[in-house]
Image 1 (cartoon, helix red, strand yellow):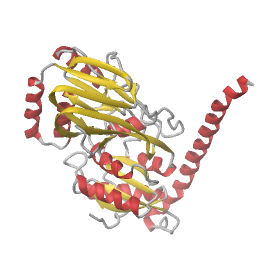
Image 2 (tube, helix red, strand yellow; image 1 turned 90 degrees about the horizontal axis):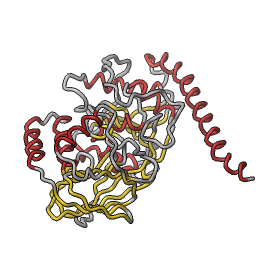
Image 3 (cartoon, one colour; image 1 turned 60 degrees about the vertical axis):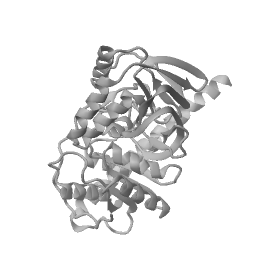
Image 4 (tube, one colour; image 1 turned 30 degrees about the vertical axis):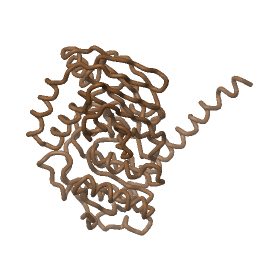
Length: 378
């Protein structure tokens, strides 16, 4: 009887994987005739699923043809059974407003064609809703896509969205000095050099070159300090300039900072870097950038409280908060329903999904289009 009970989870997992493989095969077979008829718009026959598409024209590189890129996304989504209603991200607040309105209007699906920052903005407004989030990664780093197994090419990402394989994804939440205003993050939060690295990463991604010297100066000036980290029921006192609290395995410039972090396990991965000087930190993060980080003690927890005698900078994703003495971080489990693939950041990946690179460079951009995008809303 015991052996029979133990075999049930494995049997259910096998059935689940077989079902997802059948869905993937069906989606592939359905999309082919749609693609052939797109020139005549025959795919727009009223049978398509409606979705809000939030497109960030500033994502990626300066030489992108945004009209062609948007048309490519709209066309590819239509080929996979999705009619996109376009909204443009003109600011973070605009993206959040579009997401809130989509959820309130009952859209079953919101698709974000953007980078990690915009995806985080949109995700923060869908927490606890029934609206599913899909992503088309056209940013610079695309850490979330790489962690979740979303292909980096537009057509393959849209094919995955057409499959519709979802997982419930956790979201991190930060509260500083008891402030009622919470900051949500999908990748990583932290204090000290973590915030400075986020500042530099944001400057690079947004091409705000004047901010990079400021970030480097803060890095050089940062001093070792005593920080108390309460990790659930464990208390650690450390001499450190950096504490990271990760929900996803990747951060920054595709650094594998938290190799074991899973975005669907209900836990945060905490690393304290106790006593590490400049050379050790540089060596560690260089190794992490190559996908082979040095072994570092990792705590897993639902709640983290960081206290410092001296006020320190903190970050929630790439959002930098003012210097604080106390930072509290917890996990919001199963906060989002997201369309995902076969990613390293998932405890239960979608094994039937198309392969997606974790560390490879972004693919060349396509400038070909077959249909004009729908009118945009701002």
